[in-house]
Each structure stands twice: as structure tokens, then as C-alpha cells.
Image 1: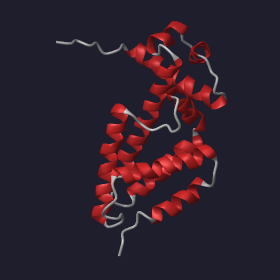
Image 2: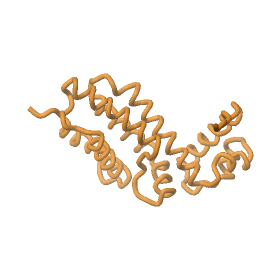
Image 3: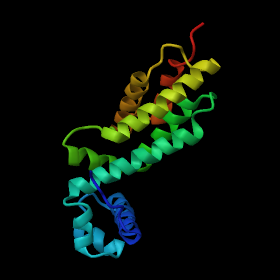
Image 4: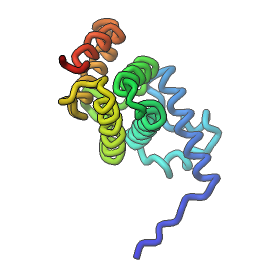
Length: 184
């Protein structure tokens, strides 16, 4: 029987401060180091390393935080059957374009292009996205054969447009969304 203790309230606050500082610093420059994050967060370096043994662990925690925020947005704003998938994709576009530094840090930490969700974050997003798709399909505002995989394909393309600056992501999304409308 495992008895995993819940972190103390001050430890949770410190972890949140570290994540907040890291996100802010990454927006300024991509070569931020853990001691600098500790200084800005107002915690000791040991606190940072206790929570995040290396930069990659910190960046993964930031990625999980981002995906949790997107999932929360989708739960609150995209399940009403009134073009929730469209709102979801626009929100993702805003997040990606507004926080390019975090996307870049995620890609660097993972050693691959793209900053897609993994693990629990992926499962959570798939669940809420499936609910949004079902609600939109039931309302007749989304084509019947649209799947979570289709939406992820569009998110991947959207991410690429934002990451490479190869065009206006809003225009790309406008064109792509036409393909999700119900067929006559």
C-alpha cells in the first residue's frame, strides 16, 4: 500500500512560483538557467532542483501546465455545440502565437519539432476534444466524420504555420475550418 504524501502548501506555492518565473524568463530569452529562475522566483536553487532535476524536467512541467490550461479552456468554452471545435482551434492558435518561446523550449527539450501533449495531458485533451466534437456534430455544425485525430492534424499544421512564420495562422485556420463544415 503506497502512502504518497500530498506536498505541503508552501512547497506547492514555491513550485508554482518557479513555473511562473520560468515561463516569464523563457519569453525574454531561451537560454535561461535554473539558478536565474530561482532568483526571479524568490526561492533557493535547491528548491528548483528538488522540483525539477534539470531544465528538461522544468520545460516538461511547463508543457503539462500549458496543456492543462488548454484543456480547462476547452471544458469551459467548447462543449456547448456552438462551434466549440472552431473556438478550440482558435484558442490553440492564440496560445501558440502568444507563447512561441515556450513552444521552442519544449521542442528543444524534446529534441524534435512540435510541442504536442503527451501522457496524461494527451489523454485529458483527447477526452475533452472528443466531447467538443460530439457536441458540434450533434448540433450539425461539424461534419459527421471529423475525429480527434483530424483536429490534432490541424493543430499540428497550425503549430507549423506559427512556428515557421510561413503565413498568417488565422487565415490558415479560416481555410482549414471550411473543411470541417458539414457536407450537404
